[in-house]
Length: 387
Image (cartoon, rainbow, N blue to C red; front, side, top):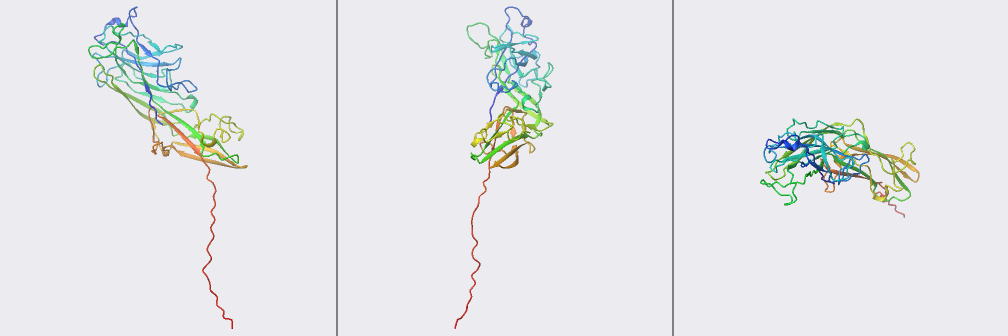
């Protein structure tokens, strides 16, 4: 049930003391720092923000932080400040190519291959849900605070990349992609960013346990998630530099708080309102088609903040059972930290980059009868003498 995806972000402002001022001057020979338009997932969310694999969506923007160190690679404790690029905007706009350059200002590759640059980025840059972003005075990667919407249609994706470490540009065709004296491999002017999802993608599916035939009809009328599900998360990325010429590692930790103000409705993607006119169209699933005999119906993807699932995180489902015209209304409440995965372990956490699908199987308990007869009472003997 778990999938892992990587993210990337980058930028910088000034070169280290070994750099030359000419890298800031846009002359004909200079090559701007470019960034690839790639993430390991495709777009599937209605509002266009959810990235599942492939390129970032047309019109998307990332914010890039860039570092220029005085030594050959990033310091092991990564206290360098993102002065070379500080939340630089990379706007892919209508560009259908795989790359874009940062703006305000455009930055250029150093003329020497011993002057190395490092980058990371976040997505989406223009989101009002992201607060506390790093500044030019922030040491290391800083922190990000993200607050998710309470309606699935308004939920946004949120990604941060690994650090693209120790980058430099090599313009000559031969030899292709050389390495410098520290073993650092050149890039072609485009920084390859790999993004990680900072949220958990959660999906809910509904089905019946069996095909009950024409005499039984099960209708799921509503489902909602308790408001105690948390809406805000603080992401703290951290970086451990490798040896010169080797990429370091990026890790992400989270802490979350603040519950939603109201329960969250799970919108059904199929169905009609013929059973109960008070229920909006699209909010009903029935055994006529969608819930028949174990075919799980996929609902809209939720993007929740990572969290340890408390006892208060529950899903409440209301459904009707129609048995030859005799209708009963039923309510089931499922405590999500009591749901087991395929390895028979409880799912107690929604982690960064996790993909969790819950399948709710609605079944009927047959009324069965057994027949037993009581034994005769103890035998009573009656004696009578006929003479």
